Image 1 (cartoon, rainbow, N blue to C red):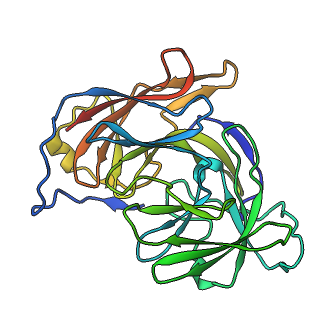
Image 2 (cartoon, rainbow, N blue to C red):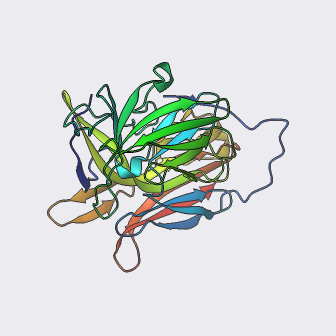
Length: 320
């Protein structure tokens, strides 16, 4: 279990599955301009209050979603996995306390999703369907603590029913969330008990510019921090290469790319506590393969807008 310790600050200091598919021979893909680089600007705002979903092929921000629009999400695959909203630094732990009265907030025992997408705080929740969980909803972009809810998850054939109670033991609300649909994940707002859109439909976006939770490990201690960077969509894979390396479509096709969600992540920049300034490393780029099999070179080059305000990611993007 991870200590209940929220240090909400943006620290950029240091920094699996293999994905080696190629273009399907029986699926036509529309031509796209190869080798023509472009500059892409993704502005989250100075407080990182929005998540921007970006399509490499269309060179478009498909959606801009406030980070506090949802608190957890259910996958639309065969097995309903539950993901916390990493942008809020949300966490969870099971409880065996009686629910007829007010529950105290535990100080320890909180679990967070792995930032690389390899594990979730709820884990294999379906093995204990009668279990109740205490959920810390997280902290907003402006530092407001969203409090806690107690939930129980009930699996249905095409949906997930979430039973939601406040800590004071008052009336339970219910929310039914579909486990099918066009998006890889369907969101749940645990305050309003409503199903919401947490991300655009699958294959319409490739990269998300956002705040998210990174777990810093120091011996036996693991501390969650809010960082800002770039995450991959489901079905997208990438690999880091030096900027100086010459890369072509043919050589990129021979590379082993990884579907690790935070492989681009946050550490293409560093933060100076003394000056309060972010510095972007200019020697790092990634080869990214979309879910459709298209290849792009992606290099973050700045974290400030033209007015010197942080929270704007500028990237050099080149189709291969």
